[in-house]
Image 1 (spheres, helix red, strand yellow):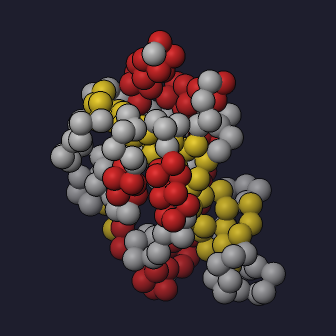
Image 2 (cartoon, rainbow, N blue to C red; image 1 turned 180 degrees about the vertical axis):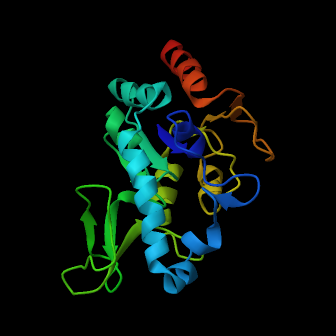
Length: 225
């Protein structure tokens, strides 16, 4: 079972979705806090912004949707591909989680992107440096940056026997393209209160519920059948 999860599943744990209807993310222009140009202009602002997100994330708890996915590991080989940068899947007990857009509780060297470090607390500040002496940045895939984990995610999607989409509108690419790598014979379940505006395929089943409710419905369906 391969699961593509998005912001909707984390929203039920109190973490705000990526941006509001006015295009702002927690009062900031996305261009200022989630792009390489924003980092180049004002790295201190970017670090402060992610410190606040990290602080909120430390107190967040996994919800029933996360827990169902962890529980399904008893019966399925569950591989999660998440667009979320939080660690709620891991907190719930999921063992196989691929983070497409990075991980907020890690930092990365600005000189060598292969140098990635776990953060012990919620703060990452100017002057915090990697072993090469360069400033550390959030281990996040920003807009206009490549998505290094998309190839492994494509391979997982192509090998899926069951594919689940939960908490995402299938509007953010390249993540949204993963569902189209799933074999035509494989059942695809799409769980979201608002059914994504995409052309459905014969093997797709829509569950128009939030993650906590929809995942329980899916669990019962899978275990019954």
